Amino acid sequence: MKIKGYRRSDGRVGIRNHVLILPTCVCSSETCRVVASQVQGTVTFTNQNGCGQVQGDLKITQQILAGLSANPNVYGTVLIGLGCENNIPDHMIELIKSKTNKPLRRVVIQEEGGTISAVKKSVQYARELLAEASRACREECDLTELIVGTECGGSDPTSGIGSNPVVGYLSDQLIALGASSILSETTEFIGAEHILAARGATLEVSQAILHIVKRYEDHLKNVGESLRGGNPSPGNKVGGITTLEEKSLGCIHKGGSTPVVEVVNYAETPTKKGLVIMDTPGHDVASITGMVAGGCQLVVFTTGRGTPTGNPIAPVIKITANKFTYETMKDNIDFDASPTVDGTQSIEEMGEKLLAEVISIAEGKITKAEVFGFNEIAINRLCNYV
Image 1 (tube, one colour):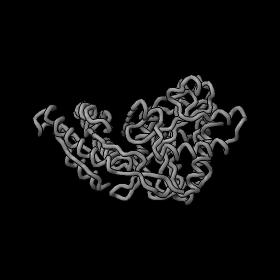
Image 2 (cartoon, one colour; image 1 turned 90 degrees about the horizontal axis):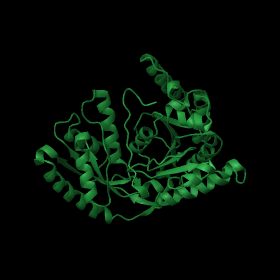
Image 3 (cartoon, one colour; image 1 turned 90 degrees about the vertical axis):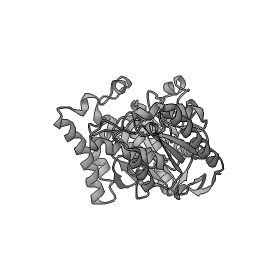
């Protein structure tokens, strides 16, 4: 199957054509915002990290930032640093170059003598990259180039019986066509990890699934905490989910029925085609950020109670099987899967419709989060979001 996408200089295929204004740290984030506001067609976000971090946390931040720049939805990047941060701009430049050969520019606020001079140079670079990006044309590419991330948040019982199984069917169909799907949220495997482990393509994959779940639980025990203190969330409980295990059994439906071929670290790019598990937190925005940094061009996000979440780099398709939520949150929800709950359409029928919607969005249809320009970013830390 073919889709129309942007072939990048590093060989990968994007479905959007962004110029990214990338802050190395919190201190350059506002400067990035000013630059992006002056150059229509660029994207940016607030990076609250990049300084005052222990080395382990700094490494996670650097991997995220480099991965976002390397994401195939990005044509090129203007990296803006302050100059005295732990996340040294020149080190970030080298890390990004190790991942991609796409266009990259560097501006350091202290070297330019302040914000006004830094903004002036950055705007010039951004306009140059945007002019180059405007000459890129969509061309026919194999669907096998696509990596789709899956996420759930604000879940209720309709997630487990409706929207998540529809996404699972989508995942199976994408994989059958040669694409890849990522199942995320390690904390939401707890109580169902044995089911996922039984689907490991190899013994090593099965052991890796069990390991990442145990690691999370052990980490929290070591600091005197329990995952069940914050999960299910208050909204989950109001929606009708009563236990973490119940939530997990609904969550893993997003992975469909195919074997798990690989388990990758947070923000790591998969090396195999098929169903991949990424070790992410259950925190929706941090999980999506990790998958996009790992190369996902598009994210499918199921919700029972509704969510506005977007991402600056990748379109986020919001799906609900709760008819009330779809009607009351039409500003944010892209796809109504409620016919699976009321019995008027099957999981397979809705899954085929969702596949068609995914292809349309991959080829340029704008999601509701993109209309609003939502650009949420959160980066996991060693303390771990739950």
